[in-house]
Length: 97
Image 1: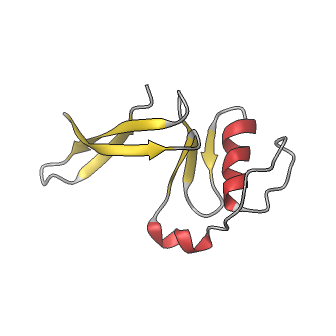
Image 2: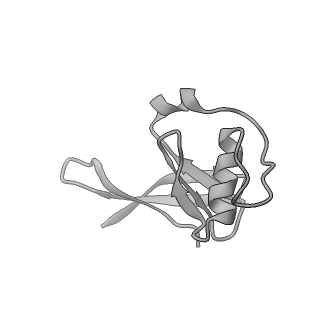
Image 3: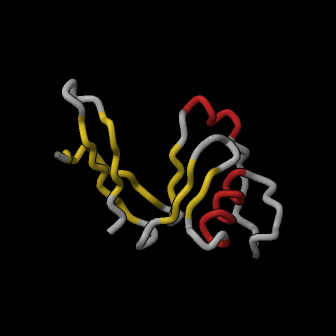
């Protein structure tokens, strides 16, 4: 059974799921890429290349996380969890629809 556990706010049309310990590897900067062949010079630029130009709108990020575009762009999206018998999430679903 799924339980709504919260929401995620999106202001760039994409999300990054990552263990917080990897955030120290994040390199700030703007999205400047114009094609999949551009070499990113910051972590946000890499996210944009993955979600805009790889053909799947999602993929593995070099800082150790996973980035995905959303179906409708910016907004607030509900998060659901399938919980085990102890109430610990065993599956998360972010509903972009």
